[in-house]
Image (cartoon, rainbow, N blue to C red):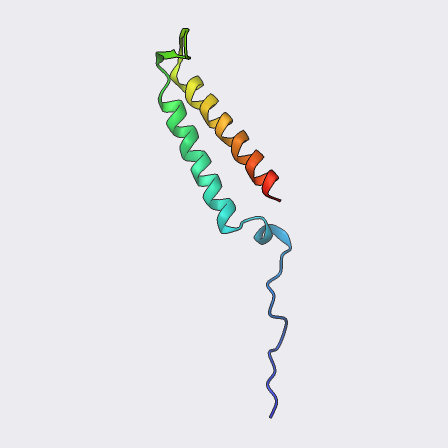
Length: 81
């Protein structure tokens, strides 16, 4: 007796299916929620940067923190490879 699989076992990686992995979808949802959170907080606030005190819109501080975090994350991911 022989068994036939009827095709290849590996899924096709062409088209949009290859671009929409669960990890990428998760990152996109987190990024979208982060942007909503940032743009919902638009009032000005005082921020202390070690010595000086700066007044800026809260969204700018949140966005700046997100960018710094993304750069640090990208650095560590790139360094691990």
